[in-house]
Amino acid sequence: MNDFVAGLTRWLIRAVVVVAGLVMFLSLLAAVLVLALAWGLRAVWARLTGRPVMPWTMRVDPRTGWRTVYRSTERWSTAPAADTPSRRAGVLPGAGEVVDVEPREPREPADLR
Image (cartoon, rainbow, N blue to C red; front, side, top):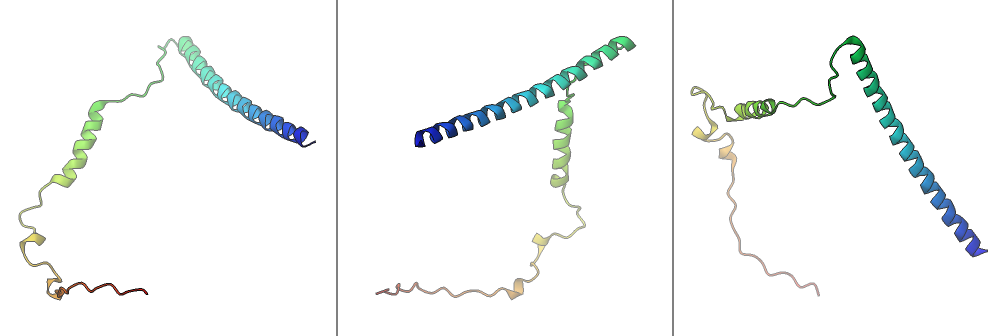
C-alpha cells in the first residue's frame, strides 16, 4: 500500500510539473504569435498606404551617451569662483572644541577563572 501511495504521489507531481511547463510554453507561444500578428498587420498597412516597412529597432546614437557622460562630469569638475572663500583656507568651525586624548598603556587582561 505504501508503494502505491508513493508511486501515485510521484506521478501526480510529474503531471503537475508537465502541466506547468505546458502552460508556460503556450503562454510564450501566444505572446510570440501576438507580436508576429502585429508585425504582419503593420507590414500590410505599410504596403496598402505605399510607405516603406520600417523595422522595429532601437535607435542608439553613441554620441548622445558620450555627451551625457561629459555633461555629468562638467558639474563635478568645475572650479569654484575666485571670490568664494574656501574652507581649506583657514581654521574649520568647531576646531576649538576638539579635546585631545591622553594615551595610556594597555592593561593586562583579567583572568576569567
